[in-house]
Length: 165
View 1: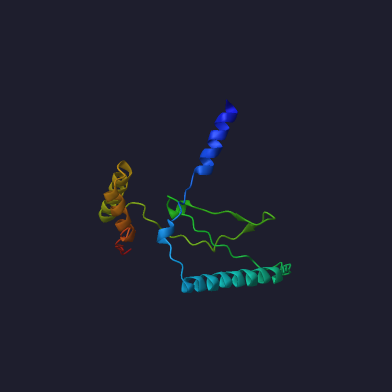
View 2: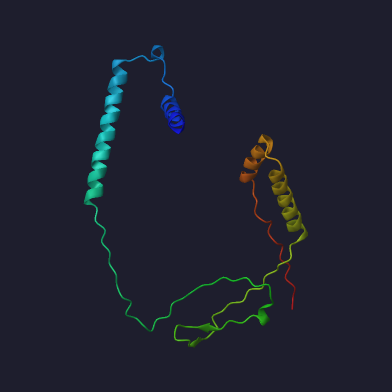
């Protein structure tokens, strides 16, 4: 029984033609078409041939050099945002030998975590659009989403009001 089923499945796969042939009445052979085909095939063969020689003649040369300057310092920039006031944040910086490195190179920049009313409106609008697109997947919404991709989606800038000390 299984052999019979396998034979049927095998014959079904053999008969399957994913790319049906064009009827002979639609095909018209010409000398110019043949010439263009021969030129194209020759160009492809030459390109493949030359690419093989480039691949064969390419050599990787690795060079390593040991850094001999032990006294120099490696400069590392790290940008970390912490929801805390600057005076409450500190950094203990240690090197590989666990030697304390001075932290006077650390720059503190105050960050405002609350959104302005304009930014809150923008955020709510963006969330509403995303939720609507998630709910239904109709063609209109997909088209609207592609139009939205070109629109500016960045958060509106914050208006900074400096208070005199």
